[in-house]
Image (cartoon, rainbow, N blue to C red):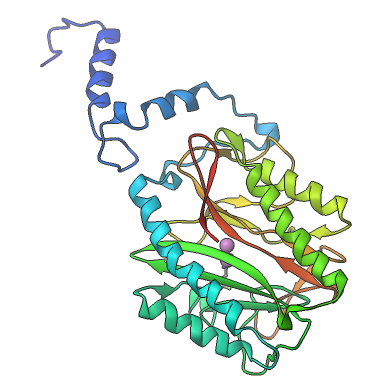
Length: 310
Ligand code: MF3
Ligand code: CO
Ligand code: CO
């Protein structure tokens, strides 16, 4: 076919090219024909009015995952979840946090994975273990010995065949702590769950932070704003940044195929945090009070949200 003789109007040419494109491979990389893959998605996207006053932005195409990508993340998450399960057995009064790190590294590597944290931007260990007033990025150490009543976050990220899964849980050393610490741990889990429940296809990333903020405020807790969740999948930290303290209907659009983490860090006292000047990693509450965090990796689906890693 040639247009050299102006047999076609420009509108006819456009229709010709578009019909051709509709039969070509989708931009998402699924290998399916565009018309059977993301044609409806793009049509839906074109209808949406992005309000810059609310910071509303379109998600870039590279963070839309294919079914194959999602399967890859889920396989990675099997290993990741097993490490977190293993921590339930291992965390006891008297154990040092380096032993937890070594067991996690062994498990991940012996199952064909790679611990994503190891050497990530210079992080020296395979997992993060954050005790009491440590908000996140605690470096496992032989010198950090867990004692009865400590509240501990273990954050694990596994890479399997290039796919990242990221999750963390809280553990109570010896199974019993103060009522105050227990309430912080329980409410933080609720905050994460409410954040996840606020995710809807064609909603906004700010909806997550709005739900988290609301439940934290209601319980008299503060939300750490300096750090947040993130897109994840073919890399560790992708767009969007997931604030846990935001307003509804703000930020990036949530489109089916996006994979992100919801990982609120919730403090008893001030939201302010400090980074350890010596190690450059350990984040602590500014006032020395307790902090808790839970994290899951989730997928925005056509109808709602699916947990990929926990
Ligand atoms: N797993 C953490 C997160 O949820 C990141 C840890 S980065 C590290 O994003 F370098 F500290 F390990
Ligand atoms: Co994590
Ligand atoms: Co994360």
